[in-house]
Image (cartoon, rainbow, N blue to C red; front, side, top):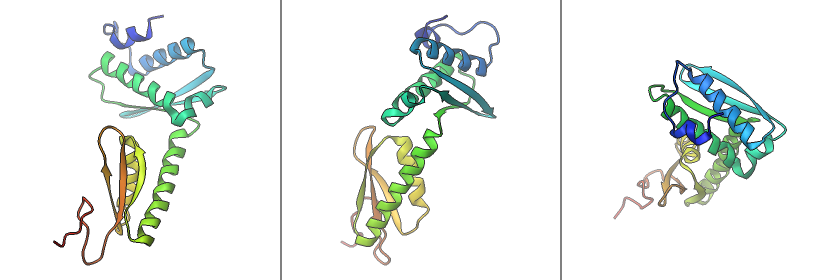
Length: 180
């Protein structure tokens, strides 16, 4: 068994190993090394590969807001980038519909905050989120022409400002009134 770091930093694989085989091998090695009691299914659709985990230790992958699942996904993506740089494929890891449920929870919270902003006529702020989660919220809020949203803050995690649009005197993107 090649070490996990060897798969990431080692030389290119000899022979014509395909992408699914590479991902399958790396995930099996991860399961062996971590002693997680999990199985997985790989599903490839054109330029996307989805890996769904199932088994006794699902809870470990999804606890703490899915940090272990995110870490494994990042690792697999880096291995693919290194071992097969010509492959242009997006790899997603999921467990028990965790990603779909998390996205739905973000949308529900964004909807509540949108309604608060509209009822009070004032901006409200969504907690600090990573880029992939902010994208979900911004896309959802963009569907409603009554509000605007923008990311505020520095660094990787930023808050989202949700503010209602005024009918005659619309706010600019920074939240300041256009009248001077």
